[in-house]
Image (tube, rainbow, N blue to C red; front, side, top):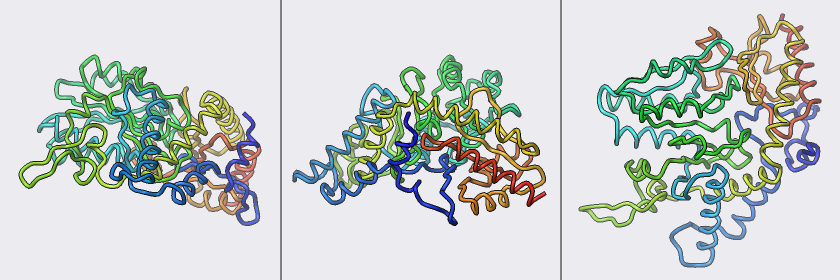
Length: 404
């Protein structure tokens, strides 16, 4: 990987913040966009802009072609069996909400149970809570050890004959833990229980093969993998999507409508009501092609080096606690300076041009586990450098002196 050449593809990285070069370490929240993605958005609006699936004119047909090519690209990127298993959504949050509602309507009865891990993002907790309240279901929690690894041996004990689904993140957005989702899926499937994998923090770091994993559902967000915001994917095995009722009603998801009866479109359109973010889908197509041009294996190897370097450098500072030290991690480091508030640390780093995330990171149960109010989170991407990590550590040392 030529990191310096990659950096040239991202215009935002060349700017200065408070007179200092931007060091962008908030990639777990959203990644920056390469010029090819920005160009694809402008090109779409200036060349092909027209609503999809509805028109016989040239612009509509061209827009539809790009949209469906994006679907095919996602299918290939995650190795789904069929394009019909790829449902476009606004993001992983809407994907999970879609599944939680539809799954609940189809399969959940009062007293049924579902299992969610303790390290989930709120978007993989709250939709299931809403569904459980509506359907009278019970949520069981799979806990994690203090080092940030799930207690996988507890899963078998939590499963019972009323368990209907297991929901687990592939990569923790706070701890960086890469969970052994393949093992979790095998355990659940031994009891004929389907599994949802939240891949929002995995899609940009790891090669995902849904057929190898054998997951039943998977959610991802485009803006985490260098595409624009407002586009995401719900993957679902075809037989499940056929059985599930639609989450929303409207145009494009119907076959026929009358006041007596409405019949629904074939998959995947049954779950894509209204005008989809077809421009966003085009940006996702471009972004995934861009990632493929670099190679996920190359990206993963480089980000692993960044993580190792950052962890070592931060630990050498002293007086800093890192949360999440699992054996297998993605390029995320969450930490606190002993005796200092995470928000104050983030403010000082910002003045040095270093962009980090502070707070709970939409994972309040993790904060409760460690009895803390939040952390500083530095998350790395393929365009970050070792020199930027040095700048981060210099900022941590400065913040430590100022705040202690």
